[in-house]
Length: 239
Image (cartoon, rainbow, N blue to C red):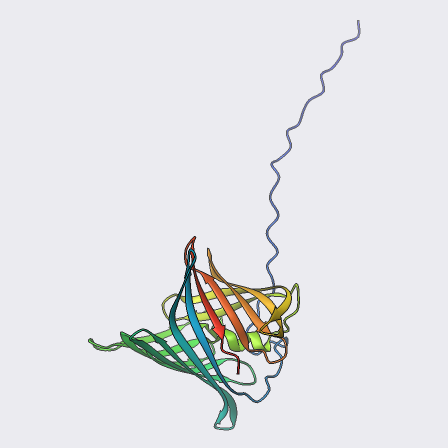
């Protein structure tokens, strides 16, 4: 009598999830960065805290942009003044206008002074707490970064368009080498100007929505969620 052979079932190996496709990394000097025009901007912003249904003014911000030079190298000087209640911050940066590589940063904050010099992946300088001796900074990163405080300048040079995405390595004084993610989700009208809508991810669970003028590259508005019901809004004061 013929014997029926049972078919042997061979278990399939578990499916390996596909690795997420990361957007390209843009470094200082990348060919995708567009040349910046000569900058002579002075922009003012209001800062408002939105908590539940309340709108609470919390300060004002002024940014001054100038094209400068040193030893024949064109530079972009940015001076930022932040006033929040009795707290004042003055932050100055110098950036290579051709590559957007940071060159120097000087910052006077509420509780410290910051002095930094950049040379490719090398960062040197000092942190000077107002009531203690300065702490030296001397590190070599694995990538040449942008300055984390100057991401707005980088946005001006990126080829922003709906669907565009990029990763930006940045040096953050408190976090070291980090990576910001830029994603352009669309275009809208803001303050009667055409504006790119950009989602800027600074870290896990920390992102801002930024409206960038298509014409000038200026940041028109930033909204950052600080909690489930709390948002910080930065709005350009129209000239």
